Length: 331
Image (cartoon, rainbow, N blue to C red):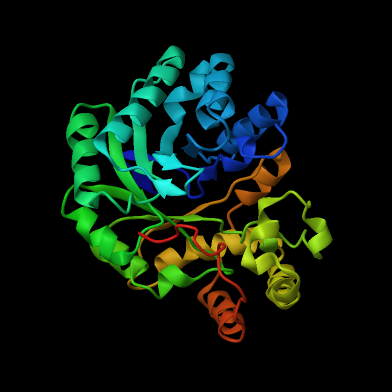
């Protein structure tokens, strides 16, 4: 089993974004059921975000409400909090004052339910106006060394940023997008840097923002107010091309006897055993209890099956960028 900050975690992590980052709030009962399903499925590394919803109804507020009802599960959870991000400007906030306000705010909120330490803290994006060394040194000296944060992670960063960061402090994980839909980190030096430095990758969106689940067959299957409607890969001129990869994944999943989502998630996990690769921990997220359980089913792919998937990827190019132009995606 993988470990982060000295704690054992399940082989598949759980992303909390979809529980609170929605156009319409979800029922608390549904949110709690999804969290319970994650723990029951051995998915105990929870990736929360202070900006996943408004301050009055974000991941931290949800954790408060959940732990009030289920206080005994706290020792089982390894909590990663992503923050220091301004949604309105889409900029990382890496100044000491911003970091202090964020981490102190989270701790003040969660102490009421018994949380005295954040296991992992990560700035959601690198602040372009603050050297990464300044940001990380402050978190390390004021929070890690004082026992208030277990370790520091990075999010959406380039290989050069990872190497700079590792010279300042121990980096416990790097969260970057990785899936059959997006393999950039395997080619741009990020996976190589993480392998050299012994840093695990948390592969977010391993189901390609839901596309690889096979449940999306036309653009009409995505609500009009869904954020994906603004993404380049979900436009009329790109969707009709990209759906061909989904069809190929579905056929491979049928052959393996699993769902397309399970194939996609476990492909990222099984990359870990290849030479020169770091530990890769898939980080799917769902607000649906049954989907959470489905996403945590382990499917071992043989070397031959991995090669077959490689052949599909080599013959197909996903069309469109990951995010709209101007969105911060690289440190």
